[in-house]
Image 1 (cartoon, rainbow, N blue to C red):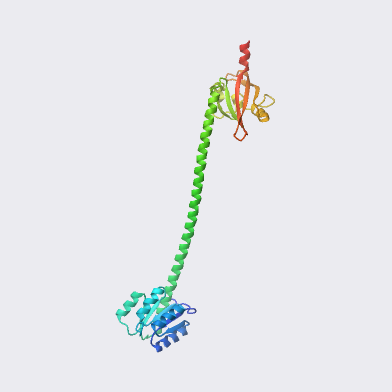
Image 2 (image 1 turned 90 degrees about the horizontal axis):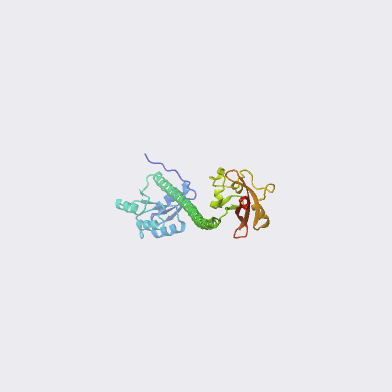
Amino acid sequence: MTKVFPQPDPAGISILTIDDTPEIRRTLAAYLEDVGYTVYGAETGDQGLELFRTHQPDLVLLDLRMPGMDGIEVLARITEESPKTPIIILSGQGTLKDAIKALKLGAWDYLTKPLEEFAVLQHAINKALERVRLLRQAEEHRLHLEEQVRERTAELEKKGEELERAHSILKTEIRDRKRAEKAINRERAFLQTIIDGVIEPAQVVDLNRKVLMMNQAARDLLPEEVKDNDTLLCHQTAGHFSLACSDREHQCTLEAIKKTGRTVTLNQPYIDENGGEHIYEIKASPLWNDNGTLRGVLEIFRDLSATDVESK
């Protein structure tokens, strides 16, 4: 069964005929123009190349046997300059060898003259133009895919650059955090060394009343209820388990330092691990940040009750 190719709209489609026989050119032009194609005719190979370069036709009908520049040379030049232009060989004196050579050089089809039916020519033209349409469609699709690939590649490269920048920032943040942690640990070790060297109970309290560190003397005073607690508030170390210091009961060293910015000495009640009541003199010194803001207090305790007992 002969494959039927769709009839393209001839409007806007131009065909170049190159044949040294005037009658054949006139017959082809009459038929093709009647169908609706625009037709250019050339009687020599040189003239055909000139018309091809001037008008850039959509299809070429080419005779092989012509005086001067023959069809094989014309075919070779056109396919070199425009390999996607379909060329149909229309020759009456060629041999099988000529046909094979023409097809190897890029001819799209080979018909012999005289044409018994123009329907054969029309079928060859339709087939060639449909192939051109499909090739152009494939090329457009390829270009579209390439553009999508370029856009996606650019997006991925941009994402990669953003990730690289984020990774660099993260590395810097991690490095800075490690440096800060090392500095904090050095400072904590330094403060711990200081308070460990104090005979009396001592502890460091931050602005949220959290006990950051204490010496062994202070740990020995902790009530049993909080000895295993790693997160103590300052009032809990004094045996007050529910309420922070208040002006009504006794003054808070932290609040006093917030008001004055200076070292303060206050007396406060203290309940030891056995429930015994003591009065402690607390000397609290402010701890400052590098920018001059308050970061906490250092408290040193002295048991006034024990002093009173010894004096008696």
